[in-house]
Image 1 (cartoon, one colour):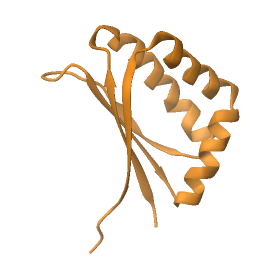
Image 2 (cartoon, one colour):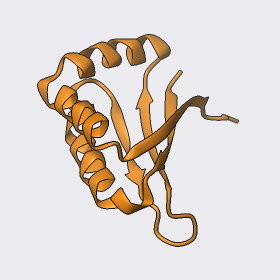
Image 3 (tube, helix red, strand yellow):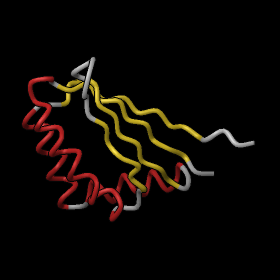
Image 4 (cartoon, helix red, strand yellow):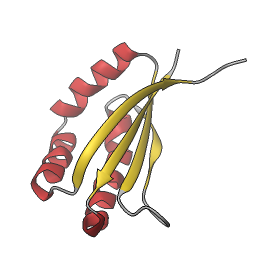
Length: 102
């Protein structure tokens, strides 16, 4: 069963450009660490401080393996470090979803 990690970010609306760089970097880092990146979405109209990311995995076990790989990956660690030092992410929520099938 495929699961999708739905990430809801509350971002600093004055640092949207920094978050976009952060998100763009994940587009290449996530696949090499074992996730299927479905994409990142930035605020466009309306609410200016909420962004989303969706990443799919074959199972929760695959997600746990991915988490270990991404933390050990030099580019992944650098991206996490940039988010921490620049403080453009104010809050992050993760929800794990499965697709409803007929």
